[in-house]
Figure (tube, rainbow, N blue to C red):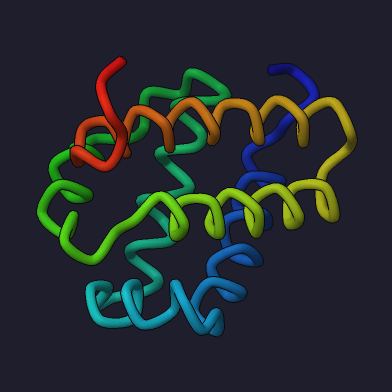
Length: 122
């Protein structure tokens, strides 16, 4: 997506996870698991850079990370995450990139929920 830049992604990731860390539902999960927030934010920025810009900077396995904590996850928590992500994207990005990254996040969240056994395989 040519209208989205690496600095915009970094700003989005940092602002979003600052919100997540304070969220009553999501904060405890993330704060229990993440030991090094600067490193995690770098990894998440690389993830979104790879997904949205095709940078190839990310290496990791998001599905395995989510499956490992599936007992703490629920569709409602994924919905909360998506809602906050969408609000943050709409606030910080121009409309077209915000819509694109929100749609991409919804697809990823759906796949993660399926992989964690939180959705029925229809």
